Image 1: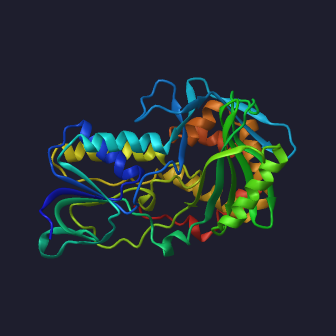
Image 2 (image 1 turned 120 degrees about the vertical axis):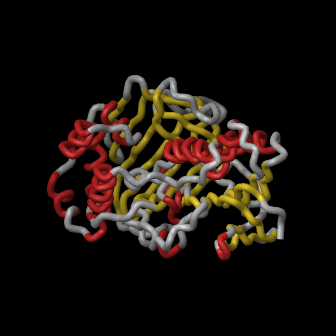
Length: 385
């Protein structure tokens, strides 16, 4: 049994580290233990999102762009922008290093690498977390572990991707705009597109992404990426790093047991990812701000707020229409790119849209597939997580 602490953060990924950095900067005096199962942090992922041009971010973006593109395979691209907004890219290693330095600066914070949490116990009216490094009695717990496999496998769609950061000796990329969804096409496995973040004229992160009704394996995703690179003439580039992921889109709500006082859930398994996009970075930062404020005031931690009703309903309809009509998915996204003003599109994607933005999104899409999607059982109201 370890000495009692004030807060145990289960998981030192984006959510756990984002909360810890807020607490360090806020001067949290309690004893904090952060449990992270991985043995080391590496540059294994990226976060990209729209943000207002003058909005402060937890770490400086590696790149920012004012323009983005959509296109079908072999089709003319549609380029959009939104005055006052930027598309920002943060490298995971930059965020990790910043967080680790802050945590190391405070003796009341401990990050335990290679340590896995097994169970949170509240018997006898006292909280404790059993781990591979012993049991930690605690006042509060923030649990950021991912969803259990049975919930994960019940998602409406999966966003599956494989990416490589490439470098050439000579300029090969137009770094003035992001290829948000280009080369869009469909095949027997679903909807596939390219995602290209040009970091400089000689360097880019290139991903092949699929929206599929099942989680796809690495072999298929690498084959998609090889095809993309060959078609662009990029197969002979130097590969600086790789990244891959399978993200749930429309993750089912958990079977909620009686909540445990003092325990909050956050991160992907608790609703951090927006169903229709897979975006979660901005949501997690907003949650970390709110949760840290509560803890700094001596109150229990909080989880993610409930999904806005209209937005959640629209996202579920959209996902079901994509799942039912993979061959028409390129059409759906091109309609949005062509018909919805850039500002309205970005506000909607950034969860700041009003009813006019929602109306523009609805008007841009063909009614038939979306009316059919209204009748799916997945559209029943879901409890908040």
